[in-house]
Image (tube, rainbow, N blue to C red):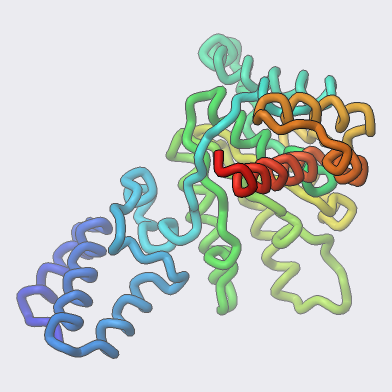
Amino acid sequence: MADLNRLVKLFQALSARDWAGAEAIARQMAQNEERIGHHVAAQRLRGALHPNGNSSDAGSTNPAIADAGGSTFFLTGALSPVALDLGLTGIRLTTAARAALLEIIAEWNHREQLAARNLNPRTKLLLHGPPGCGKSASARALGKELGLPVYVVRFDAVVGAYLGQTALHLRQLFRFAETTPSVVLIDEIDALGKRRGNPLDVGELDRVVIALLQELEHSHPAGLLIATSNLAKQLDDALWRRFDLVVELPLPKAAELRSFATERAKARGVPMTRQLRTSLARAGTYADVERLIESEERRLLLATGR
């Protein structure tokens, strides 16, 4: 097993709250066990270091996450960075939804003027509507517009196996949002914020909702905290009041889908064949349209070789 010198360095790093250093030493210990043929021991060490299967051996730990309130080991598994592709102009939204999100951008860009008048920009948003209507895409677009990185919360890392563990993870998560200018996206918050009082649920689920409500109530994000919901009717009533802004993204109308399909097909060089039109007529969301056009583009590429 690990020699004394490495253990001493590990304990020194922990004592100094050098979480990135401690993780690096722990990885070295696992690699050493692997090198001398202790494969089971190496596997167990790596499993203990990355219980959510999010090993950083293949890449570097995000420094912003590693330094956030001493929560390296949890946050590296709970927050996944996402690529920022489109700005808000590239997202199809209703006039009301676009106006609301443009207000958030304006508030962020003028936050110093607001602060001079003892006003704060709105930083906690709830986007709700059917799947495929642009909720997550809008969150990413806001990150691009504001020049902030976007992290998606992984629920398999947040929800703990023991009483109180989930509440602790939520505290660490909100601490990150409060200290790191970023967009933290809680996608499908329905998993944590269901209405309390269901007799079929265990009491721990109600306590998770209460912990979430408390964190939202007292949180002051350094960037934006955005939650999305496909099942708004199932959310706890008190949850709605914890957000600064609630925006509905409804299903698009048929004419809007046709316009979007024509635009996307032209942009990707995909001919609007009768077969494609028939498939698009069954689409119900912008995501459906994107998927069908990409599928047709892929088919054409394989058929023609170019």
